[in-house]
Length: 280
Image (cartoon, rainbow, N blue to C red; front, side):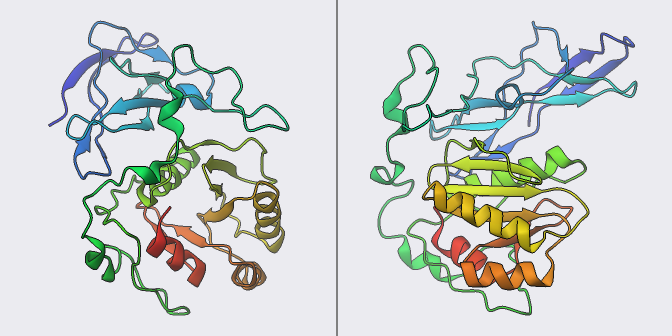
C-alpha cells in the first residue's frame, strides 16, 4: 500500500492526507513515487512538461520510467505538486535543428541509457507462444477484425487512468504508449494544429481531448508530420473521428484509438490492432 503523508495547503491552510497513485511497470510490479515528508508542497501556477513528470526506479526490476508527478487538488481551487524524493526530472530531449543531437544534456547523464532497447529483452526467450491471445480488456469494434497478438514479449494488463481533464487524456495516452513498449515519451517538438503532440523514439502521437471528432485534416497533418520525421504515427481522440477521417486513416495506415472515460484506449481501425499486436 502507498504511504500517506499529511499535506497542508499554503493558501487556505486546509489539512489533507495524501497517498501517491501507483503505476504498472513493464515487469508487472506497481511503482509508487516516494513522497518527501520533509519538503513542502508547491502550488502549481504554470505547467511545463519536465515539471509534470518524474523518473522513478522500479523496486522490483530496477527499470527507470517516467510517471506523472504526484499532485493534489485542494477544495479552495489550488493545485499542489507533492514533493518526491530520490527521483530525477525527465529531460524533454529536444533536438538541435538539422541534427540528431539532444540540446542541453543533463550533466553527468549516462547516454548509454538511450541506445536501442531491443538489445535487452524485458522477458526471457521462449515466451512468443503466449502472444496468440488478444490484449486483456481489449474491446472488439464491429467494423474491423482484430488481429492476433504477434509481439515477441508478453505485456501485463494495461492499468488505465480515469479521464476527468484534458491533462488526464494526455497522461492516459502516454501510459498506453509506454505499455506498448515506447520509451522516453516527451512533448513533440512540432505542435499539431489541434490537441497535444507526444513523441518517442520511432513514433509520433497526437492526443485530441476536445469534444469535437477528429477531422480529415487532423489525420492528414499528423501523417505528413510523421513522414517528415521518418516515424510511425498514432491518433488518440476523446470524441471519435469523422467518417472521412477514418477512411483516410485506413488508406494511410494511421492507427486510430478512442479514449473512453476509464482511460483505456480502444482500437478503432485495423492499423490500431496491428500496433497493439506488434508493439514498439
